[in-house]
Length: 219
Image (cartoon, rainbow, N blue to C red; front, side, top):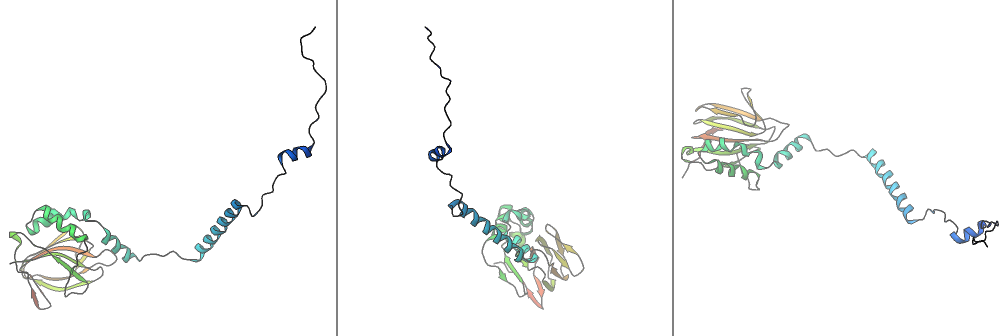
C-alpha cells in the first residue's frame, strides 16, 4: 500500500472579480478636496502669486553712500586697533591706553559738535609730552569741506578711515600721516562716495580758524 497522499487533478477556479472587489474594497478616486491635495494646490497658488509679484516690484536698494556709511559705522574696534601704537606715540600714552581710546569710538557716547558744519570731535587726554595741544579724533562727513585754517604750532594728523584731499591736491587714506609746520595753512575735503573721514590729530599750541584762535589748555 502506498503511503503517498492522494493527489487530485482538479483545479480551483479563480475568484470572480466581484469577490475581489468585495474583499479589497472599491478603489477611492483621488478627490480635489483631499486635505493633502488642497494644501499642495494652495502652495502652488502662493508660488504663482509670489512669482507674479516679483515681476512687478523692484527690489529696494540702499544708496551707495548710505551703505558705505552703514558699513563704516558698524565696523568693530578691532579694525582700528592697528593704529594704537601710532596714537600712543603721538599723545605719549601706553598702547593699552590708546587701544581703549579707539574702542570708545564704537560706543554711544556723543561727539562734540564743532563750529564747522558736518564735523564732530572727541577730545582725549595726553601724556607729559603732549600737553598744550589739541588732541583727539575728528570726524568729517563724506563729501564735506573743512575750511582754511592755520597752525600755531606743529600739527600731526593720522588718517583712520575714509579719504581726504587737501587744497594742494594731495590725497591720503587710512594709515597715512601728515605733518604741518607752525604757520602753515590749508583746507581739505572728506572725499564723497565712501565712509566718513575719521582722523586723529595733535595740533600743538592750537589753530586759527575763521580769525579765532582755538587752543587746548591742560590743567
